[in-house]
Image (cartoon, rainbow, N blue to C red; front, side, top):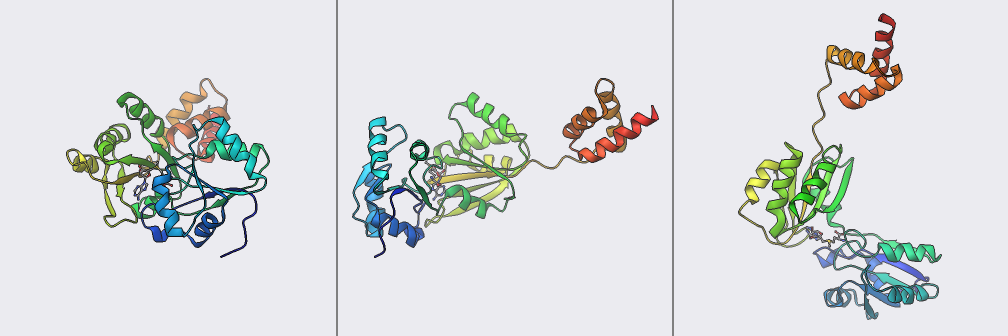
Length: 279
Ligand code: SAM
C-alpha cells in the first residue's frame, strides 16, 4: 500500500463518530505500524477493520505500569508504534502525554497524524468567538470542586470549551450559569453522528432546557467570552488614578488602574501624567 514508516511514535487521530473521517494518512499509518497502542482494544477493533489494518494491538493508558512503557520505548528506535484513543485525538482528555514525554526524553521521533477532535469540531459549530479559546476538559464531578474550577475560569477573556456527558449536563450548566453569569453558550451533541445537534442560547436558557431533560450521547459545552466591560467615564478614570497615585508611582498606578478598569495602558498612563502635572 505504501512505503514502511520510519521508526518512532505516531499519534494518530481517529473519528469521533463518522468512520469516513479517518484520514488516508491515518489509515496508512495504522496499516503499517508494527504495534498499535489503544485505550480499549475492543473499541478500536472496529476501526482497524475499517482501515484494513492487521497490526497487533496492545492496551495502553497513562497509568499503565512503567514496565509496559519501557517495553514500548524499547521498540521505538527500530519500529513504528501508533497510539490511538477510543475516539478523536489522543492526549486530548485521553492517554498519551506520559508516553510522548518519555519518548522525547529518550530521544525517539514523535510524529502526529492530526484529525478529528470534539473540542475543535464543537467550536466550528457553536457560532461563538474562536479567536481565543480555553479548553477546560471535564469539570469536576463534586459541586465544590466544580464551582472552584468555574470561578478560576470566570475572568478569562476567551471562549471556554468543556467535555461533558448526558447525565451530568444539567448540573454542569447550572453551575456554569451560577459561576459565569449572563453569557452565550452552545451544547453540541453527537458530532458527526446521525443525531448531531447544536443548541444555542444563554447559559440560563440552556440550563433551563436541560434541567429535567438529560440528553443522550456525547457532549461538548462551549461558553462565549465575558462581555467587554464598558469603557469607564473620564471622571471614573480620574478618580481611580488619583486614588492609586496616592501611594504608588505614576506608572504603577496607571498599570494597576488599566488592568482594573479594562482601559488601554496608554490611555491610563497619559492621563496619570496629566493629573500628576496638575497637582
Ligand atoms: N480525545 C477526544 C477528542 O479528541 O475529542 C476526547 C476524548 S474524551 C475521553 C471524550 C469526550 O469527548 C466525550 O465525553 C465528549 O465530551 C467529547 N466527545 C467525543 N466525541 C464526541 C462527539 N461525537 N460529539 C460530541 N462530543 C464528543
